[in-house]
Length: 142
Image (tube, rainbow, N blue to C red):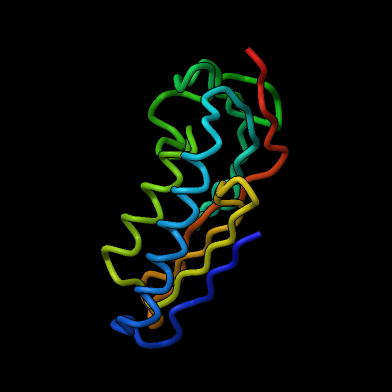
């Protein structure tokens, strides 16, 4: 498991942000080296509205299924977007790092998949934190 720490209270701590960027680059490289393009996972998206969980299935790099974990119903395309593939999870992290949040913490599994991400966009604001957790990651043999 790769672990990257938070950025502390200084949102412009460039050394800490650079360490986070390096951890992200290493995770992306690790993921790319696996050659995996068919998989499924559960993602729990954390926002001020509370956690929302869905199960995502990706075949040959394309999302083929997104269903709510609570009831198995399809997730509308305009909901929970940006969390459908490992590449989109990386893009979320890159987006956050580009905006220099007050704090960001990310953990990756041995394949490089982001498994836990927390972003505090502003230390002095309430309810703007976000992130996601990934669990039950399963490879699909094709």
